[in-house]
Structure formats: structure tokens, C-alpha cells
Amino acid sequence: MSAGTGGGWQAAQTASPSGRSAWGYYLTAVLAAVMGLIFLNDFRYALAAQRNWIPAAGRVTENKVVEYRSRRSTSYSTYVSYSYLVGDIRYGSGLLEVNKYKLYFSGGSAEDDLQDNFPQGKRLDVYYNPSNPSESSLGLPGAPGLAVPIVFFLFSVGLISLALHSRE
Figure 1: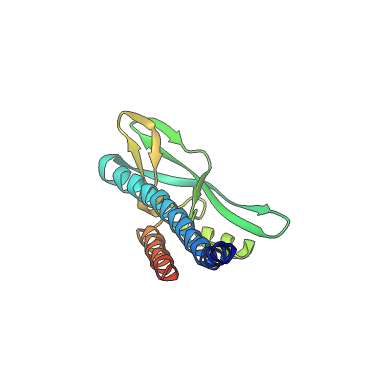
Figure 2: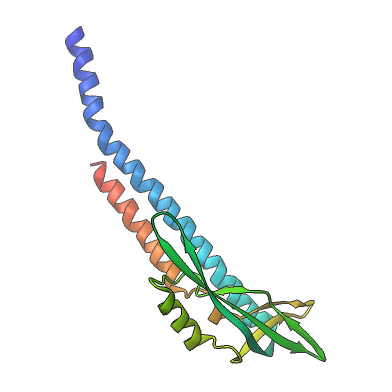
């Protein structure tokens, strides 16, 4: 009687680690898929703005790199603000993060990228909402490419495949 109980407990204990690792794969796959959906939504919004809103000539009025420090790492983000005309009225944006999904390993590389793509005074296409001209977007140049969500979805599929194989 006790031998049967001990054997069942031992079998369940040895099967448990692979079950836990499979759940880890599933959880990571779900998180990667959620990140992919977030990136896809950003891309979709930028594409819809570019297709459905009215284009206007704009100019970069400010650009800056912001450094974020934590105990273990430092990260950099790039921001621009721009202005554009609708009729005789000038509208402007607050600081808008561009290249939001790009990793910079130094402030210099972030600054160089910002100066190459969004130097102060540069003309750019701005898309504004005809129902609310103060709502604007840079369209696709201000959004992640379609490749970013695809990579996250493929990563998700790979993790699910690993999870299924770890259960065997």
C-alpha cells in the first residue's frame, strides 16, 4: 500500500518539472503575443492616420534625447515636437516619442539617429484628423514597422512549439 503511494508520488514529482517549464513557455508566448499586438496596434493606428487623415506640411520644432537610469541599466528615448498649418491656424504637437521600439546603447547613438531622421527645422508630412485638427500623427515614419509585430508573433509560435515538445 505504501509502495504504491510512494511510487505515484515519485512519478508525479518527476513529471512536474517538465510541466512547469511548459507553462513557462506558454506564459512567455502569451506575453510575446501581447507585445506583438501592441506593436501591431501602433502600426495600424499610424497607417489609418496616414490613409484617412488629411496631410499637411509640418516642421520639426524640437528634438531631444531623454536618458532613463535604473540601478542596472540606462536606456535612451528620442522625442520630437512639430508644428503644422491647417488653413491659417498653426497647430503643434507636444513631445512625441519616435523610434519608440528601437534600442539605443548610448546617448550618442540616439542623438545621431535623431539628427539624421528628425533634425530641428526639417520638413515632414503630418496627418491631422479633419474632425479635430489638433489631433495629428506622423503616420508610418513615427511608428514601428510591420516587421516588429511579426517577429514577436513568430517568437510566440516558436515558444509554443518548444512547450509542446517539452511535454513529450
